[in-house]
Figure 1 (cartoon, rainbow, N blue to C red):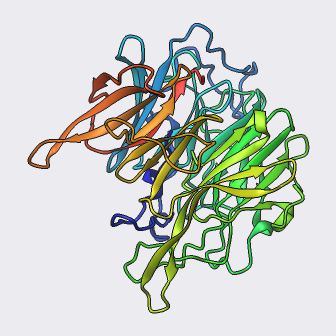
Figure 2 (cartoon, rainbow, N blue to C red):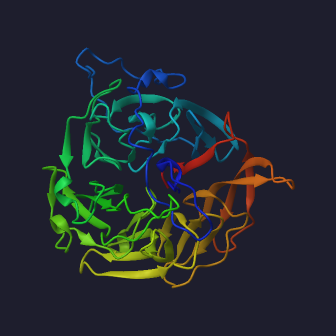
Length: 438
C-alpha cells in the first residue's frame, strides 16, 4: 500500500475531516519532463533509442526470476522524490533513484515495476531484477501549458501495451511497451469525457485507479467523479456532491469503453461512497468475482460555507456478476482513510490519518490496531505487512523513519527491518510496494 494523500498536494486536515483530492492551483506549470534527470540514468543493458523513438529490437516482458523480495519505498520532498529498493532479506538498500518533482510513486501491477514521476508526467519502466534502473520512459503530459496530468497507475495487460490512468485528465494514455524509448510519446489516448456526470463542475472524471482482470479480458478503471469545486470555506474540507464514483470497463482489443450494465454513464457501475483515495482504494477479489473499494467520504454541506458531519466514508463490495453494490464497512466514525491493502477474504488492512488497523473483510468492524501504527504498507505474500512509520522524539521533533514487518493474526512478533532508508528522510512517504509482486 499506499497511494494515500501524498500525490495530490492535498490541503490540510484536522482530525476527523475530509481531505479534498485536489491538486495544486491551475496556475502552476511544470517544465517538460526529462528522462535523463533520473539519478544514474537508464540501466546499463537498456538499448539506445533509435531516431524514431523506438529500438531496433522489441522489449519482452521483464523477468524477475531470482530477484530477492524487495520493498519499493517512495518518498516525496519539496522539489525532488526518491525511490528505494529495500532488500527484505538483507535489510539493506540495494539501489535508489532520485528524480525531479514533489510527487511520485511506483505502480507494479504486472510483469514489470513502473515509476510514476507524477509532477513531471514521466512514466518509467524499471528493470524487473534491479528496479532502480530505468529501462524505458515516456512522457504522458500532453496539453502543453496545463497543470501536470498526475499519472496514478500503470496497467499493463500484455508485454506490448500499457495504460496510464491520469487523475487530472479525461483520457487514458496508451503506451507501446514493446519498445525501449527515452521520453517516448503515447501511441493514442482513450477519451472518457463522455462519462462526466451531470453536476460535476470541475469538468474531470477523476481517474483514481485501474486494474486488468485476465479472466474477463477487461481493463477496469475507478472514476472518483469528485467535484473539486465543492470545498468548505476553510479551504480544504470536501463537501458532499450528488456525483458518485463509478467503475467502468475498457476492451483492450479495441480500446473502446464497454458497458458493464450499470446505471452510470457508459454503463458504469455506480457506488455510494465518495472521494476514493488514489491508488490503493481499488482491489479485485478473483475468487469472489468482486471489487473491494475504499472511499474517503465527504462533509455535509451546511449551506453557509461550513462543513458538517462525515458521510459516505466506507468500504464497498461490487459484485461483477449481479452488479450489486453493498457496504462492507462503514468508516464515518474514523479519520480520513489513506489506503487499503486487501490480501484475501479474511485478511486486509486499512490505514488512516493517524492510525492503521487490521481488518477481516468478512466482518463489519475493524480489527485490532497495527502495532506501531504503520503509515504506509503492503502485503509481503508471506502472511505479513511490510511498511514504514514516522517516529517522533519526546520534544515533538522528527525521529527516524523506520521500516517494519508486521505479521497478520499474531503469527509472530513485529520486526524492525531498518531505518532512514532514503537519502533525505525529511519528506513524506508516498507509497510502498513489494516486488516481485507476491
